[in-house]
Length: 402
Ligand code: SF4
Image (cartoon, rainbow, N blue to C red; front, side):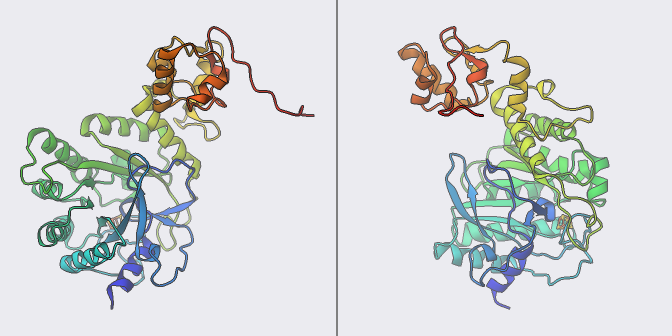
């Protein structure tokens, strides 16, 4: 069988693994695949050599640039049977396996042809996590040593991988991921009963940070340690937003994760969870918004509008909900507020704050149009600010609404 057909077979089940920056817009309904990959609900039937059909997608990188990357797996066979996963053992469809040198050569052929600039490599588990991790490492070593590949490489860490393997993977990759899938061991048991939450998933994330902190990357391909990320399947086993966000906060602080991905659960045919309802994609969106509020805006868990079940409202932006409670009666004076106050105003992000602080050095901001002139959109902020001591004059619609 030719390699393109093999890649197509893999990509049919795996083509939207999150990486790079989470998309700003509301995600479309998707299925969750192995170790957290996302799959379009109805996989299209693309032309045989279409880029997406062989697993090439564009990662959004920090700053908004995109990187064409091959997202694929060494094997779609797996001896485990995670309840949500299309690659689980016993599910009937054609499995594909690449040898490390075959995968490395295939990728480099595509790279030289200008089709891809990055590789995201995962795998099903065969003969245990240690053997499987060795194969991922072998592939990465062939790429870095034999082919002198200097581009982006994201490697998965298999459940059960050993600390030395994690270190070697770190020496070869730009990014490592260990997908937790669930916020704790009880929830994980309902999703993937053979995965051990602490031993197989939390520990490797801790090892990565220990190694980054205590060891020099002298054997690393670019003399730098890689970033680390994880992903949760959202919905399906009844976990609350609060559970997910508490563990997320802990991991960001303790393991210095660069990204946490949230993927809305969607049932996959011929799995034990096939009859469960898909999670609302807006929930995934609200989780991302809230995690950014913690990371970039200085908000705390207690300030978020959780309901009595620990979930965020789907119909209201969490920053807007906070502002409606706190800023409607106590608007922020744009000309005097500190950075930490300005950034809490709806519609103002880190860049908007910088622009406001720069503009204040030139003179007073008196009108909404002054803000628009410096590139700060005003539609969302006008109810929550004062401009030189006055509520801003709102722009009235051209025609009265009847
Ligand atoms: S370990 Fe679980 S999630 Fe990963 S490929 Fe195997 S069955 Fe799927």
